Image 1 (cartoon, rainbow, N blue to C red):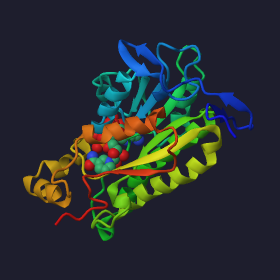
Image 2 (cartoon, helix red, strand yellow):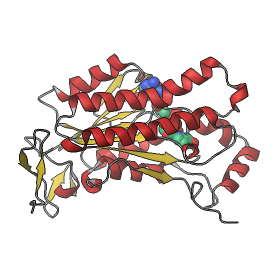
Image 3 (spheres, rainbow, N blue to C red):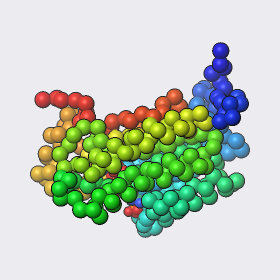
Image 4 (tube, protein in one colour):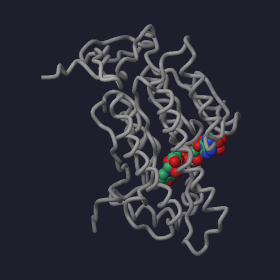
Length: 289
Ligand SMILES: NC(=O)c1ccc[n+]([C@@H]2O[C@H](COP(=O)([O-])OP(=O)(O)OC[C@H]3O[C@@H](n4cnc5c(N)ncnc54)[C@H](OP(=O)(O)O)[C@@H]3O)[C@@H](O)[C@H]2O)c1
């Protein structure tokens, strides 16, 4: 029988897990069980056990994710297209301006993290770039469609691609789709298509990279109160309609969504891959009326 304390490399050779579930380490004054840290992420970096890269760190959900992961002792690198927005984010150790739709630019950021010997190994990539496109298909022009796919699906793909190229010792990729990918919501055709693409991408990549311990999972939120949703949340009528749509009677906050992302980014979820987790006030599965 296989020793549960051993994992297998791409080449089939056994390696020992460097983390155990019950030893506690102090990271920046915070007590952390070693078991929560990414497997094999401790080599020479006991003070800062792993690096997490957050694409869209300056956004509503992004800031909350950065706060949580930096509190867990991750060295944090944030990406966005706007330096000023990134500068406002607390908890980032490094800020990189990059358009994540570019294969080359995103890959250069990931490569530079992985090849920096001074930096803890890259344990997680989290993609929060995206958009909300709310129009029926017949009112969507070509540019809006292409932008929606680029922002939502291409950014997810560049993250998976670069994780596949550089995270040779495993880790976690967390993508974000939308509740509309799994349930028919009117006027969501473009974003639903992009979100469903993200979910298919994650399942395939999870299969491709499982052998090296690289996990790929998705969080699928319903409406969350962030700058992206401001067109809806700034209208009392639209907001009330949205509240009623969610069985739990309210829209989400970034703090409702970030714990699921944090969990998927760490080894707490070390036996989970290829999954889509709905964080949606019950919208995808529940009828309360
Ligand atoms: N809020 C919702 O109701 C809701 C619902 C379902 C799903 N989601 C999804 O959840 C994720 C996070 O959304 P959010 O509400 O936190 O949005 P947000 O507040 O608008 O944040 C998104 C962040 O991504 C950055 N970004 C966008 N495109 C980028 C690109 N090409 N390259 C690099 N950075 C980019 C933006 O910063 P810059 O503009 O500075 O680049 C922004 O800081 C998105 O995928 C969104 O589709 C949100």
